[in-house]
Amino acid sequence: MSHDLGFHGDTMAEGLVVSTCLGGAFVGSLFSGSIADGVGRRRAFQLCALPLIIGSSMSATAKNLWGMLLGRLFVGTGMGIGPPVAALYVAEVSPAYVRGTYGSCSQLATCLGLMGALFIGFPAKQIEGWWRMCFWASVAPAALLTVFMEFSVESPHWLFKRGRGAEAEAEFEKLLGGPYVKGAMAELSKSQRGDEADTVKLSELFYGRHRKVVFMGSSLFALQQLSGINAVFYFSSTVFKSAGVPSESANICVGIANLLGSLFALVSMDKLGRKALLIASFSGMAVAMTIQATSASSLVSGSSVIYLSVGGMLLFVLTFAMGAGPVPGLLLSEMFPSRVRAKAMSICMAVHWVTSF
Image (cartoon, rainbow, N blue to C red; front, side, top):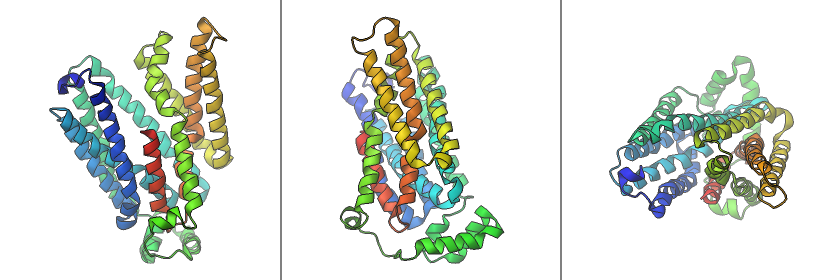
């Protein structure tokens, strides 16, 4: 790609291609709460797909660096809007007893998407211009999201908060079936009691009674990113290369570890609880980092260095996917009151993108 667009060897330009996407994600996440509250969760999904489609198309047809950067900015904006809306939607349409399992599906889907992108990108080194096909391929999931959300239910919580109780009841009918609708509506009415329908001010989230929860949520997302997960993903190929493993095989190994951890979270979230998974996850990541640090010290030598380094990296990815990856978004969507949930989630996700940058 850098050869075709004329910035090969320019590390500043290469960094901009990545960071522009993260900057767009930060901006998108800030507006995600207002969008989700304004047009509903279902339409917010469709709106987030629009910049993804536009941005991917622009990147696929880019003739120079500036065209690529503009496309990446659009893609990042869609990336920023999507995750908070997904967390809200899952929390509001899922029965409480399986909410953790459904919430973990987002992490699992992310993992499968990464592995899919990996396989699509394999021919890039052999086929000139294949990177354009990779961008075109990313248009398809966004387009499918737009179409399928047209046939999905709207969040009953959002409808009820908007005074559209009859529509909320109809959506519960589709989700749960007739016998459970009255109970779900009663629970919804109880949970919404005392939640005024006025506009949520930012000062209320930063200085009001919700400030502690917003601080906790922002800190949790910050710690998630500051744990070093992005560095592990970025430099995993280098570590595996020192062990004589090709970069393609290294990425597959990391993807499998991520997938296994996500599957564990999927089956354990509602059984073990959110707090237990977080503690176990961060503890496991600390152990993994200790193993990697040991491999880089003078305490070990020879083949032990390779085994400890590779093993520590795979353990880190595995334990991250077990808790630190999927839990924060689900936990916060459950902690925030319905009235401030969307905007509070958008602030926490903005912190996520800043620390990721």
